[in-house]
Image 1 (cartoon, rainbow, N blue to C red):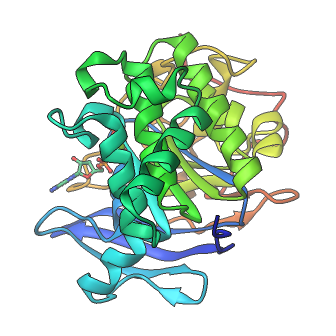
Image 2 (cartoon, protein in one colour):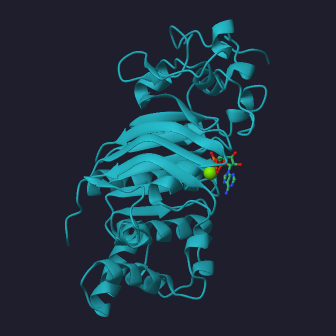
Length: 328
Ligand SMILES: Nc1ncnc2c1ncn2[C@@H]1O[C@H](COP(=O)(O)OP(=O)(O)OP(=O)(O)O)[C@@H](O)[C@H]1O
Ligand SMILES: [Mg+2]
């Protein structure tokens, strides 16, 4: 089996817009073999960020900045060349596994096709490899099940098949956008454990996108917290979780101290600003319990807080132990 290449992803000053800014000045690295968790409320720009990395933005939406995988710049790469990167070095899984599967094709055939597209093997070999991959992602009686159609599987099993398809190209980077949102809690934990095991054993990097801090907290080495199209805090997961500096991060975390509660981003009163009418200073200021006059003047830069953590806040929390909330 061919060894996957080990590549670092470096996203620098990524902006996505469609007349108005939707993602603003997003920068992060994903070291080989690590998981970067991107968390934020609905509409904060997580999906557009991951789609910009893949060069798969909707019509009329454009990206600028830099996205480097290994030594190659992906932004502005000719579409044909980008398609080969997308197939071979970056794989993706989305919230709805059904959308990634052809309902009329047996799952074993679907996986085998991906194998054949990326490895110089015949149909039989590809078939065998497909069954291997299904076993690998925890599908029992894989040889038998390879003959089934997508609708014959449960949601969790379908997501396993999509992961097997993603692995078939032996990617160095896996983009997982809300991979467990459609699944119940137990299955969600199984899928996250599976992704984590594959990450460790196969040495691939993962961009894990979720609106659920519990999902990101439990599975990421580094986390980035998005708000209104910007990263507002990022750093080693252990640091951010134990000592959040941005009032937004602290607010998210205070609603479930152990990081195990679900669906809690709504715990902060108010709503994110409309991308068409962003406040002139800090985007979070209208909801922030610590807001000061200087927060309202000019855009807030990212600055280093402690250890690996950077924060986009003029008045960050001194210690994560004193989490403040505005009310209720
Ligand atoms: N094709 C588009 N044209 C215009 N605006 C868009 C388009 N796609 C997304 N947006 C806007 O960009 C912003 C970010 O959207 P995005 O889908 O990245 O958010 P998200 O963080 O993934 O949210 P969710 O948790 O709901 O998936 C939102 O304000 C959204 O309305
Ligand atoms: Mg999304």
